[in-house]
Figure 1 (tube, rainbow, N blue to C red):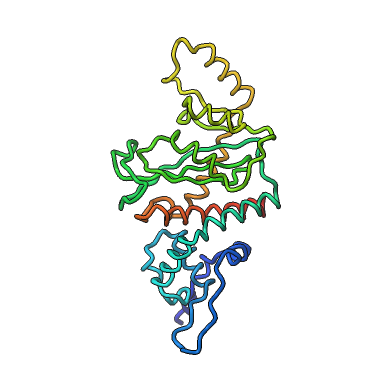
Figure 2 (figure 1 turned 90 degrees about the vertical axis):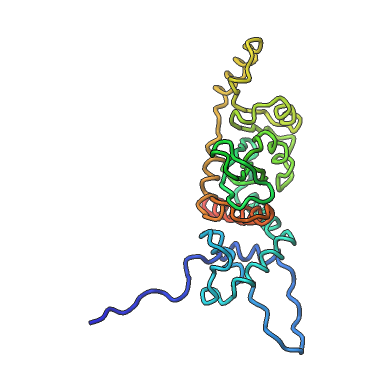
Length: 286
């Protein structure tokens, strides 16, 4: 007897979680009233965002999304994504999720960390460059600032040929919510951020820095200062692992492992969308 075909006809795996959809719906523009002139009805926003969610996780091309999966054509999904990106919908969503996370779990301002992740960018485009650690191939970087639990608070994109210290100031300035300057705050970073101007700016922003000292930059005349910094790191151990863990969470989404978007704004929108999901998970599960 022939076994029945149990393959599902529709995609059920890649659906936007309902709590995230409720937050996103508040950021979307109001729908226009239908006119009596007729024409094709407007595609459902929920179906469109499910298509975008599918592209985020699978990393497939926009035109590879089949109409039967979500009831919307791939051209409509991509066009709506572009329009929402221009309106700043994904940035608003990430900000809303930071505020939601702060309300549910409380932001851990005392210990923060920042780091970057290099990704290949075969098509090039804005904010991409030759990666010196990957035989000069085109690449881009995701720079991330997180709180004590690893919740993303700020995201910046640069080319793979740009040094990490260049994005450090932009990361601190572009935090989604206002930082409480009067509270004790520590900032952890690796030796790529060991620069005089970065340390000075971090101090002006009210941080106590825990930036790993780069031994190549240390002079013999600075032995006492180097010993003092190393001693402070022993007293306050580095907690950079939280940002590295968050980066690994983000890169589970295939569209963030390799940048196929020529427009940096499109890729940034996908990164912000992924950060919103991470913030939701942290708010629910802690």
